[in-house]
Image (cartoon, rainbow, N blue to C red; front, side, top):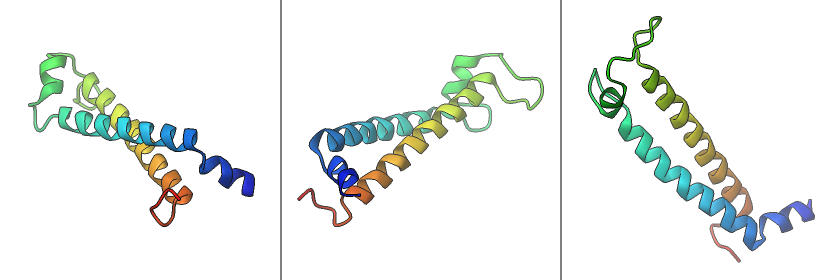
Amino acid sequence: MNVILDIMHSAPFMYTILVLWAISAVGLIVFVLMHSGKGTGVSEVIAGSIYGTDTGSSIVERNLDRITVIFAIVFMVCLLLLMISYPTGSVR
């Protein structure tokens, strides 16, 4: 157990997690803002007339949903790892 905590408290691990967290935070903001409302938005501008036949939503919108979920999962995992590594909020 001490080996795992030593790895989690190491500088390379912390910097890697912080970089992943920052990238996922920015990506999450960008992809949430790219979602469209009711027939408007960036995804409609990009997609044009490419629509799926089963649900009526565009292919681009479904891909935006998938990418947004991936960024959200990475963001939450990074936060949980940082919370476990530094429960008091300080590095040392």
